[in-house]
Every structure is written in C-alpha cells, then in structure tokens.
Image (cartoon, rainbow, N blue to C red; front, side, top):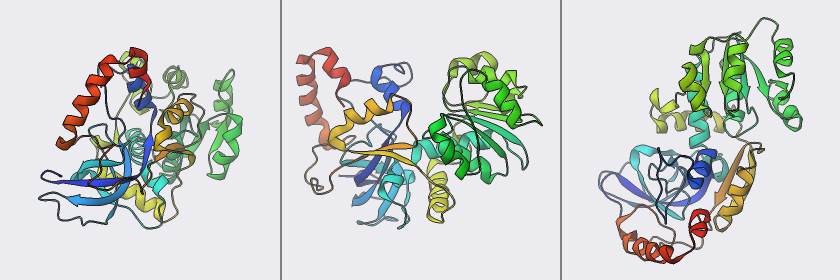
Length: 325
C-alpha cells in the first residue's frame, strides 16, 4: 500500500541513463552505493493504480510522468512521491514520457547554468546523445547559435534543428573556430574526456562552462556541474518540458525500446556511448496488477521477497550479482 503522499504507479515506460550504467559497474560507489539485489532507474511514466493518504490530487487511472528517488523506476510497479509526478499530456508517447526526467532536467539545468543570451555562441559536446539532443534544442530556444559536436551520422539531425554540426576528433578546435568566427561564449559538456580543457582553450570563462560528465575536471578548474533541480523542482521542469513536447517545440529522439525483460541488452547498447537520443524500457502492462508485484521495488510489502532474493544472491557467483538487473 502507498504511504502518506505516495501513489503506486504501473510503469508503462522507464528510461535508462549513463549514470545508472556507472552505478551498475560500481564506478559511483562512493556516491551511490549498491547492495544486491537492487532496484535501478529514475525516469518513469505510467498509470496511477493506488493512492495513499494526502495524495488525492491524483486519481486512479491518471497518466503521469515522474521519477523515483529510490532508484526503483525500472520495474513494473513503483511507489512514487506525489511531488515527483506531473500529468502526461495525451499526445506525448509513453516512450518519450518515460525517458524524459534525467536527460530533460539535466539538459534544462545545463542550459540555464551557462546563462545564454540571444545571439551568443555555445558549443555542446555529445550533441546527439540523450542529454545533448535536448540541450541543443533548449539552447536554440534561448536564442543562441549552437555548435553541436557529434559524429558525422548525426549531422543531418542537428542541421534539421538549426544546429551547426562539427565532427569531434583531431582538428576539432579549428573546426569550432571556423564555425564561430566571433568566438565562443559558453560550453556545455555532456560527454567528458577533455572537453572542459577544450572549452578553456577556446577562451570560455570558467563560470560559463558546465559539465555533466567530467567531475574531476570540474573540481580541478572550478567549472559548473549544476543540475536543474537546484533552480526548480524536478516535477516543475518536467511539466515545462512535457508542455514543449506536446506543443511540438521539443523533440526527444528515441534510439531504441526494449522490453523490461531485456534490460541487460539495453544497458549493453547504452554503454557503447554512440546512441542518438534515449533508450527506453517497456514493461508488459498485461502482466501486472496491484495485487501481483513481482517487480515492485521500494515498498514495505516487498521486504520479505527482497530478503529471500538476498539469501539466494549470496549463493550466486559474484560476477552474476554484478551483472544481473
């Protein structure tokens, strides 16, 4: 049962993100430690199936976009705080809605953190990825000239969104300067791997560089790593982005959709780091009802099942525990 100010959501779509892949490998253990068995994922969209006390602004059957703060979104049923939900517009697909939170809020935060003004030039690395593909569109809406660093295969998509495409690799500095003869005013790094240093070499001021991927460089040089939720609550940003999508002003590219049962394959694709847009998981809505919770995470009723699985996992091979979703 949902507790106070919670609702139970039957998940129709859940996005996956590079940060979650890093958590799975243990690369972020200092920040996000994991014990197995463990839930995963933040992005979700689905239908309200049960309502707790104080959550009566929603009704059973409402279609919602939201996020889990318990790393539990990649499941069939998830408990979600009411403050982490916003209504899903009817003309926004489940796949788009379910993959929106992390990429959308991160892109929104990065664009706002570099304080773009009309007519300025901004470079965005990883411009066709899950975050980058949204950041380039939001930066264009702010009136900036946007230079998107991406592989040649993504240049046509960038051009169709009024972004100047530039190939990464050797000679990238000269190509950026040629694309922006009046200089670069801001830089958003969604990829890592030396782009903070590139921004500094281009003469961008420290306070106008934001990276979501290279935290070592951020600590070394003092550039920004600001998430969007510092400026506004996540559900508010979600509502704004969903409205832009519904009105045709923002596109969320969907790279691939996997059934929830193929979550491992989905992460394998994500970890190649050449995805255009978002990878999304789709649970089978016919499999689950509120009284049947085989993939339910983050609820008191699941504790006994977790304990049983934990006992089994201790007898499993360590490498299996690391890889299993």
